[in-house]
Every structure is written in C-alpha cells, then in structure tokens.
View 1 (cartoon, helix red, strand yellow):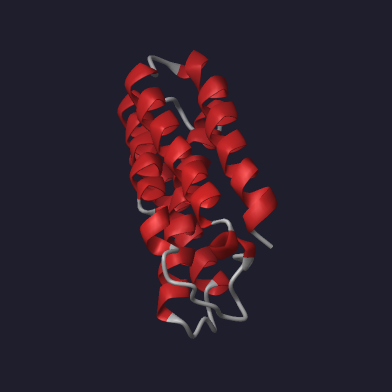
View 2 (view 1 turned 120 degrees about the horizontal axis):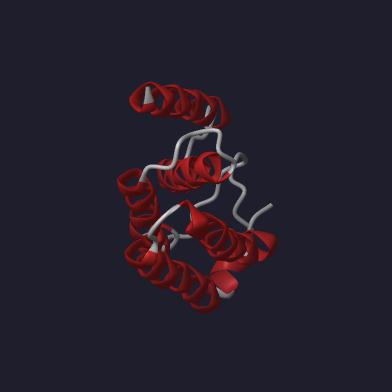
Length: 145
C-alpha cells in the first residue's frame, strides 16, 4: 500500500511539474525548475507523513530529507549562470546577491543532513518540516517571484 501511495503522489507531482514547466525555452532554467520541483516533491512526502495522510516510514523520511540536502547542495551550481526565461520564477537579485543566496542554500544543506541523521520517528516531523520549510521560505521570499 505504501508503494502505491508513493507512486500516486509521485505521478501527480511529475504531471504538475511537466505542466508548470511547459514552454520553458532556456535549458539552464528548465534544469533549475526541475531541481526545485524535486525538492518540493520531497517536502510533500514529509508533509503527507506529518499530516498522517501517509503512514510514517523512517527510511522514506530519511531519504526525502537526504535528497533535499543533496539538491540544495547543487543550488549554487545550478544558478551560477544568469539564465533567464519568461517562465522562470527566479528574481534577478539572485545574481546581485549570489553569495547570500548560496549561503542560504548551504544552510539548508547543513540543516537537512543534520535532520536526516537525527530523525527517529513521526514525533520529529514537525521540527523537520519547520526547519526545512523555514529555510525554503527564507530563500523564496527574497529570491523567487
């Protein structure tokens, strides 16, 4: 049953990502958008567990947190080129404040790796979501349309 739920959630997220990314012309922007969508997909897995819409699964939770850390570690590299596209949600200020932008991504990487190693059960999910969600919000509020 767990794999069925994960499959349905994954298919839904992929379908919505494909729709959201339709019409993107710049290859670098498309890669960034896919990276951010994958990060959001992993957050949604954790959120579904926290809301008890999906049973808690420690290996799956650890994998989702770890993937968020891996993806955030690649953020600086993904945004190193100032690529633009009308569909992009990245604000130009990213490249004006690139050091600050990458510091936020690095902080998310560090937080994710720490949380991945410390999560023990569903009682930890609220803290995981607050920490990771807060890091996402801090970056999005300044650097995303």
